[in-house]
Amino acid sequence: MRSLRRATRSVALPVLLAGTVFLAAGCGSSSPSASASSPAGGGAASTTPPAASGGTLPSSCDQLKSTVGAYIGGVGTTRALVQKAGHVSCEFFNAGLTKGAILNIGASTPGALTLLESKTRGQGRTTAPVSGLGVKAFSTTNHGKPAGMAVLTSGNALFVVTANLSFAQDEAMLKQLMSRF
Image (tube, one colour):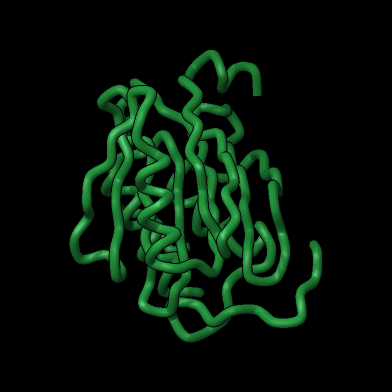
């Protein structure tokens, strides 16, 4: 992890899921991004909210690993920040710790997404609307470099990625995850 910290700048990104604010450490990098295309690729709660695709939201990081790995060059390290039915927060890094992504997925509301966007701005971070993705979406930059994207689906599922990837990669990953969950 130390080499990742040396290679990237830390970003604090508040994440709102089910009315709770979580602070996720993100990544920003000055290294060039790869292509946006990708190869194919514990606690319990009484119910799991429906997801964007009509299924259920993921309850473990293992359910996300193959999708994320396609964008960061394989997953070498996974850390579960939160794992429970209806809400996961997971940190993934490739084996060389040069690319990473933090995913937060859970039930939310339009108001919570608006609050997340408001809290994300500042300390060098800016946001911009993203059209054609979910009901509402925004991208985040950190000191002018892509730092992530958040999207709310029509089923009130919030998908947030904080990563040192291009916006095209963030969007492609989110679309793939939203089609699965």
